[in-house]
Every structure is written in C-alpha cells, then in structure tokens.
Image (cartoon, rainbow, N blue to C red):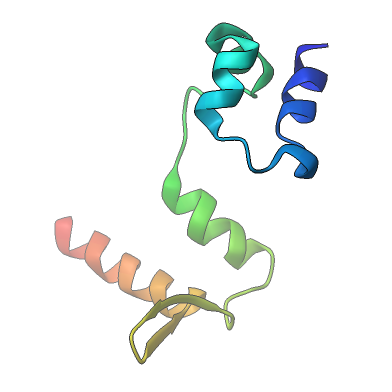
Length: 87
C-alpha cells in the first residue's frame, strides 16, 4: 500500500509536484518506507564500471568531458593503473 501511494504521488500526472510536496502529503516516514532501502554495502566502482563491463559494454562511452570521451574499457584500464600505483 505504501509503495502504491508513493507511485501514485510520483506518477507522470503529478510530475509537477516537488519531492517536498509529496513528502509533506504522504508524511516523511511513509515516503521513506515506500522507497527501497539503500544496501548496507555499496560499491560505486562495481555499479558504474564492473557491471557495464560484465554486460559487454567495454566499447561503449562511459564518460564525456568536453570533447573527450572514454569508454568503459578505457576507464577500467585507468582504474587498474591507479590501483596498482597505490599498492
């Protein structure tokens, strides 16, 4: 029921409502209960980089900074070199 209330509150029909308005309408505790909890352990590198490598996206663009682009494979190689420098 709580998840349904959160989904209804955040549906496209009510997308103009701010998160603060939704939280005030539902009650902050209800909103927090409706959202999946953040995992106890979270590895940003695994989520951003390793997951995409496992799913075959090594040649896909991972980062864009101005005119520069880096693929997931290139980022992984730089991460490995940086990790080796710390050893």
